[in-house]
Length: 505
Image (cartoon, rainbow, N blue to C red):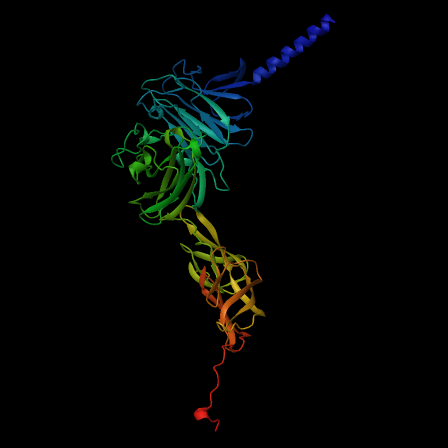
């Protein structure tokens, strides 16, 4: 029995150490690394599959936790990390105190590339280390190539980061904003984009954003009026020299406003220029509710970056609509019409039918008419932009028609007023959601078709009566039906009859 207990205890220890061995993996750049003492290959020129289910530490070539030992001069190492879950990789340098320390001003740089496309995601130097916050790099890539370069002028403690696998917060069906500006998704239809200033987004202040907190008197020497905590990025193409975005900010007690700005980026000098007002990047920025962000002095066809940051790190939900000046696919606003619709899109493209029926006067003209509509129709506008390529947007057209009228009960003529009332029943398709039904100058609430209404205080004159009906929300859509009913003859009391000169002759 004792031997069995010893054996069982030994098995438990083996299981414990096996699980503990997998609890943390340490990746050291450019040198032989180990997992709890186990031997591994040197992380230079290799591809590593990151186990998303365990703790993964990524350290500088000296390998010390928290930058305990300085790295060396003149180093160049490369490693590719790939997520085993397919989720994007996140590099968190906030894992430990003093976990990101590169030599100041020497060009020592940590580069991050998308391993599939080769595109630069971001690059970190000592200028990206701020007193109020440690950096993090949230990518949109499940395979990331990291390149480390140090030159011959000075060294420092290096880095100690956590690698995790996590996606940014998703809102509706639009792509999420990026944590770093070079991966900013190109938004090609900003008529209802939604996002959040989530804690997923770490402090990211690339290039000349460093040290700009606290004021921004001019666009070039002061980019941001506040401090960055959870900023994220979108990209757009300017179609005019001024771009206007309508924001709606919400979030209850967790939201103290969104600091936002529009920026251009010069890749030759690696510098940003602010194109929007300073006051929306400092303090509350845009408070809960509706706000407008305007960028001026833009160059048509150039890419610009829209950055949102929660004030003091607050978590806010927001929706964005491209009011004007943004190169997007825009088929125009949904409409309720009668028989014929006028479509108004932007750009150069082609109209087509998704559902319903219709004949376009000119399918290649952004502004055109379409006739022969069904009750409900959806039309697609397909256009091409420099930044987005071929994109499309659709517009819903409701054909609200009053199709038939029939007569119903009719009251007798009232002698005191010589009036009567008449019931009629109208049949219609796709009525508007607002407004009233107008019949022969009288107004009625819209119900379901067929709808029976009563026309009151009509004049009794024995004449045939036509009916003119329309919806107040579509004043141009008027339907007329002739000779629907006949009025009763006049019932005004007759005057006494007196013979002329006392004689009927």
